[in-house]
Length: 270
Image (cartoon, rainbow, N blue to C red):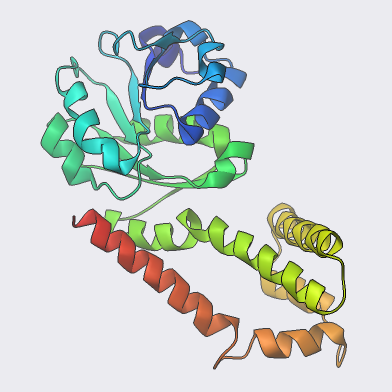
């Protein structure tokens, strides 16, 4: 991590659960000095206490970045702690779900704020995070946020905050859909006579391997699907069920993402 201003002025982390810990591990691995990190967390983990960072010692004097990683339901009591922080040109980055930029602006005032939506594969460095900044953020602020968040995977920029609900429905909640697909694929294997352990091993490795192939080759998933599908073969027989436009995966996935995006809007509106 080459940001000398970040190392000099420091980074403050409000909340250090699974997501915060994954990010912190990535930053430290990239060379961010542990002594430049300050963490505020009521229940610091054993792992966190072994990292050499400052824990519950305040935010420091005008840190370069404050990353907000508390659970949404804790936001009401967490944000007031930031109001007394000397803002200066501190960049605030939030990875908390469901909290719009206007909420942060109401508590923090006229400061640069980047809202980010990561997902749980960040825990193994395979996440993807969407970001959007408020009117005070510059391209330099967004690049700083990208550098920090790229420690746990890919980063994409949004054009408008209203897109965050769709992002939540696709990538934020999406890992759970894939995990359920693994469950269903394994159960289907059991129904065809496989032992549960074998069916689960096949399903888990198949989904993980297919995802890696799509990610690492960058090839169109439709083409990858066609590559596996022989005319009148077994894959085609299965896909005729799965790809049915009336009761197959397409309408089900549309309804799934729409439901998650709708709930994201409801949560954001209180």
